[in-house]
Amino acid sequence: MKWLRSKLDQARKPFEPGAKFEKYAPAINAFDTFLFTPNHVTKKGAHIRDVVDLKRTMITVVLALVPALLFGMWNTGAQYLYQEMGLASVLDVPFMDAFIEGAILTLPLIIVSYVVGLTIEFIFAIYRGHEVNEGYLVTGLLIPMIFPVDIPLWMLALSVAFAVLIGKEAFGGTGMNILNPALTARAFAFFAYPLYMSGNAVWVHQGDTDAVSGETILGSLASGQFDGTVDGAAANSVAFSGPAPAESSVLSGIDSMDMFMGYIPGSVAETSALMILIGAIILIATKVGSWRIILGGILGGLAMGAIFNFFGNMGSEFITGLVDSGKITMDQVYNDAAAVAELNLSGWDATLMELGTNQLINFPFWQHLLVGSILFGVVFMATDPVSAAQTFKGKWIYGILIGFFGIMIRIFNPAYPEGIMLAILLMNVFAPTIDHYVIQANVNKRKKRAKKAQVNLQTA
Image (tube, rainbow, N blue to C red; front, side, top):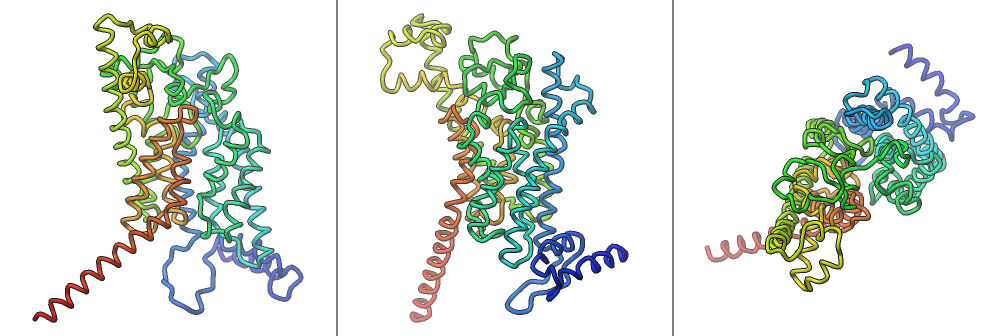
């Protein structure tokens, strides 16, 4: 290490104060502090001495992302090759073939994300005359993990530039942003290039070809085409008795263990709940991520899913009653709008019919956490220490509301069943308000306590 230290010291000389390249010092300092602890300390004001700085915190998050990243690379390749080769199962794809295929698709996205994002960071650091911040170490990895692997690289580059410029540097850089930068990039791409970011065939490589369907479970549920054998569906057979033959669906036969392990189509980040939970344990054990936000988000999502399941069951029972009474057949429920109209349903009855046939509402509440980006968003996006709530009670409220709104948007908007992005961005905006009211409530409580103590003192 002494050898490396001496080489870096020599390389720094042209960038020292008064030297030829002084204004480019942030660039060389960034590489220096990436390898070694900075040799300067705070000169004035209150501060805390600790071995963990921003750079080490960001590296911890990157390490927590590695399990999901490696699995996502393998799954991306496996999902494509399994359908392309016509194999019986994803697990039949040779491991290295799948991993190499996934790496070939994923690594260019990561490289473009870091090159574009860090270039902008270096330019702003030199222009403002401050050191390069480390926040983009995490953002630069998160962005390609939540984008489709087939998105053109120039679209990814524009999304990264928008996120860094508008979502981050416009507010003052790392630590000053209101919205999560990675989700800002995805939101920009979603509205600017919807054909590449939404739909049921963008999450598997070449998913729009005849050989590869690319269907996700959420997309199939939203379009009413799912007829697999998900655990728990048997208890709600009315809602899951879709008209499509089972053998026509690539999702047929998927069980909850497949979802938990991640053997399903989706983005690199989201498919494996197991790998995401390993990342959550790393974040919580190192106290980098808030367990209150993570647990609050999970509980909020489960509660909202259970509420929708309750109303979905009411609708299923209503439809079953109509079928049992001979007023309509199941085939007519799903395929004959005229027959349904002849029933002259109105008001609550029509609502029950709609609830009973909505497959997203009837999807078992706990399985909502195993598909889509709900779990990944709660663990890695909602816990962003800059854009999240800061108070203990505020973190609970913030997390629970993200879970609530994430499931609500998923179910109410079939065109965009992945609602966690909008839920987190919405709560990013309200996080300061939540903290304000939590702090104000504590202030009011202490005022009442002081007033009561003063009265007791006077009466004594």
